Length: 169
Figure 1: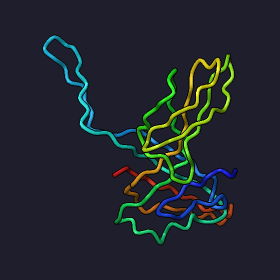
Figure 2: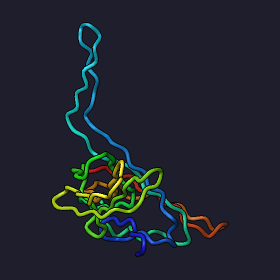
Figure 3: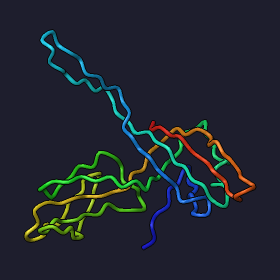
């Protein structure tokens, strides 16, 4: 099976545009309130993801035709994971439709593939005899607002550099 590509607005980022570096981080309306006795009370109103994709390759990524004023679908290749002793995991983000979530079972000090099925964002791992823990992996898909990427072209090295910042809507 070939590795899925990062896609933005339906356009896959091809290897000739550079092996992409991908970052993701949680952003949100979160703060820590202090009570009169100094105790901290976390307050979270919302949480979304943001990040960047960048690369340097022999050709540009081909994303200049996208309408950056509209929401774009970002199919990430950043692996998200959840671990526990149980068999059922509610995924906090939507998995890519072209790459089903997959699982591993911890047997001694080795992680081995385990069967996994996903329905409506809930992944269920098939029990493995002797497993101490399970881990579910998936690649998320987001609806994002992205900015037109800044680009550089070097005649000296015959490369194109680019970077895309994005935030989940």
